[in-house]
Amino acid sequence: MRRPLALALLALAWLGGALAAAPEAQDFAELLDEAGMVYQQPPGYAPAPVEFNPVLPYQHRVVSDDGQVEIRYVVLPLDRVEIDYDDPHSSAPEPDHLFTLLFPGILTEISGWGRYKSREYPEDEALRLFRADWAAVAVLEVTPEYSPERRQALVVALHRNGHADAYQIFLGNDVKRLGEEAKRVQAALRFRE
Image (cartoon, rainbow, N blue to C red):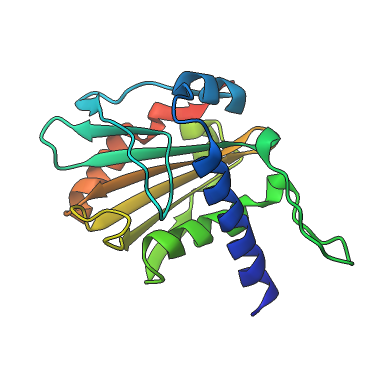
């Protein structure tokens, strides 16, 4: 197995374990505070119960008023990242560099190893929209294990050095609608000044 893929799988396994091990009753607001982030519920969306997901656990979820779009939020404060990677060359990635591994790893997992298209936001746009050092977006079809009723996803990934990685996963059955919704409400989750 190539080393970058191995590290991506290690990082993704750690993420899944860290999220699954988090207490169910953890308050999303407390998690945002720890990550240095703010969240404002998007207009036209209502909170929905968080349900365990074996592919990629998440901490908060909202559904559009018409029930056609769901947004799952994954927030990972970097202070919680501990990598126990036994490598004689000490090449374990630093928490601030995991986003380059986690983003494609997450896309691979929720697509069931399918294909996806992604692009990075320009630095100035990432800063303006999310107060992030890095941001990217991807579109893909999701595996039924991730979402049995919604087959398309648009994923917005955010990273701010020293703070957190975060993912907004827009789910639905119409990728055009997902794009419109993402443009309209993606800045609901962002880093504080």
